[in-house]
Length: 559
Image 1: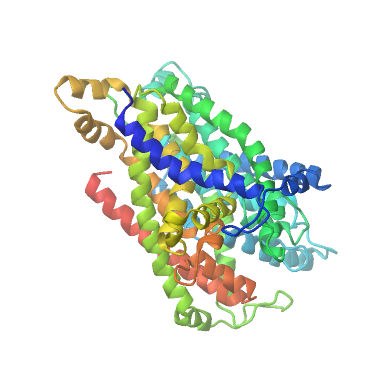
Image 2: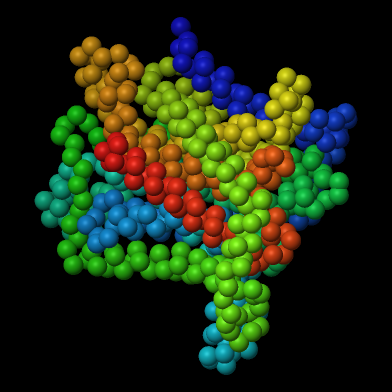
């Protein structure tokens, strides 16, 4: 007999994921815009696959994605180990700082690195040229390497959230055994700690690779000015720059993303199956503790602080300074000679800023709650149950990874405007809620699965033997151990929903404008100083909300 829980979960996932993708496939062969009469054609597919720029687009996309992935995983894994597994001074403060960077709009880093490392007007390049008498600056943010740097450091907080929960739930007795056997800290780290986390790190890498393929802001803000084209540029031009928009061609171009993402998704699913071999939390006196580094703790402290200063401090300081000047020009001897708060005054007076901020908070809270409820249920079915069909559910839930959020927003547009029964919802905030839950569901499941797979079944079996029901054992045994992962997942979804731009561009209307779209509006209008002020207000608001929520939640649930 098929489990009712599995049936209900599959129905929800089909509506959230499978139906939009089906309508997107339909749109690839439709001659007209979503919801309008037309006929079937193969012209869009032919145009997408015979483009003379395909080879250059493919090579740039792969170099950009793999380069950013290597940078992200290197920094995030080291940061997670420092914070979760060592006695590095100030590690609890260091843990918060990457999350703070994640709370600012994703375009902040792209804009800041352009202002700092632009080949002609970048402040750091100009300072080097004037100091050493060079003809040109040594850096260029508008190259493939500049794109890799900006994208790589921007995703460190995401990778940290994906990896850190597994570090925090690792049984330290395994490391203790290595140290007792004579291994030093370096050998223990590379021969015990990281090998145990290899599947979790690799599966997180598969997700991050797909995020890099689907990156929207970096290719637009740094790639286009430098004429470094990736597939996202092509889709953006088909949807936004073409008049009228070429919806069918953009949909066909997104199919190439499916081919690239399909391989990474297959690796991701294979790795999640292997995670069962890495169960390290059992009923045998599990007690988390940290590793004492001795004098080396000051080295790890310096490494963490260096990352914070370079990757977070520099771009934030740059945008902050631009927000405080009446007019910004790098050609001035001192572009920050005159400081003012008028940009902040203008930002607070703009109705679009306040209205979009409240809408974004309401949307993010709703999506976080619903995503955790759905994601924890699906994760439990995948990891802990023996229900037939659970792998199909896992595969369906992972499908949004194959499409950029911009394209998935297009898929929802096709679905809502084509089906009469739900057409009335188009333009409401519920379209954004549905879209965001679907987009972030794979990441919610990944965060929860990484930790749930480390909890041995004997813990729940003991509760069931004592007479507890499935729900009681899940609530009293599994959930308390999963508190760090649940909190990480909630924070990740809330922040991601608040800062989501790709899907929001197509799904908002005048009554449901969200904060990232308001900021994009300022950028299109060329209001750089007002844009910078809005970005700082945006980030400060989100930091205050998330830090307050984490403090309250930690106090209530005993983390």
